[in-house]
Amino acid sequence: MTTQKKWVHTTLIPIRWGDMDAYGHVNNTVYFRYMEQARVEWIEAMRIPVRPGGDGPVIINAACTFLRPLTYPGTVEVRTLIGALGRSSCETFVEMRIDGELYAEGSAKVVWMNTLSGKSVPLPDDVRALLEGA
Image (tube, rainbow, N blue to C red; front, side, top):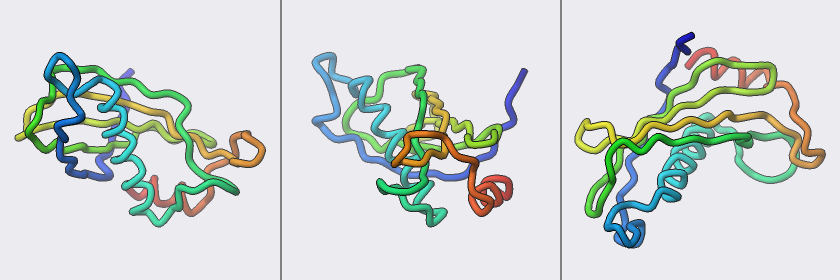
C-alpha cells in the first residue's frame, strides 16, 4: 500500500565541519538532527509552539535510509512531507538533497500528547485543519 504524501515545508541546513565523523562524512546521528530541525521549523511555521507544558507534538519513532554520504562543505535541502492523519498522529517523511540529488530519506510519526500526563490526545481541530489543508 502506497501512502499519499504532501509537501509541507523546505529548509536549508549548512553542513558544519563538526558534523562529520572519522570516516569523513556526516555522522548518522546528525541526519536525525537535520530531520528534527526541519520538523520543528515546519511546526513552528504553523504557529504551533514546541514547548513543554500542555498539549503538543512529539515523535514516537524515527527512521532514516542513508543513500549517499553527506560531506562538508555543503548545504542540505530538507523537504518535509506528510502522509496519513490518525486520531492523534501524523506520518511525516523527509527527503535530504544537495543540488537536487537525493542523499537520504527519513520518516517519523508525530503524535499529539499531553506533555504533563504523557498520554496521547486527539489532534486539535485547528491543527487537523492545517494538516488537511496542506
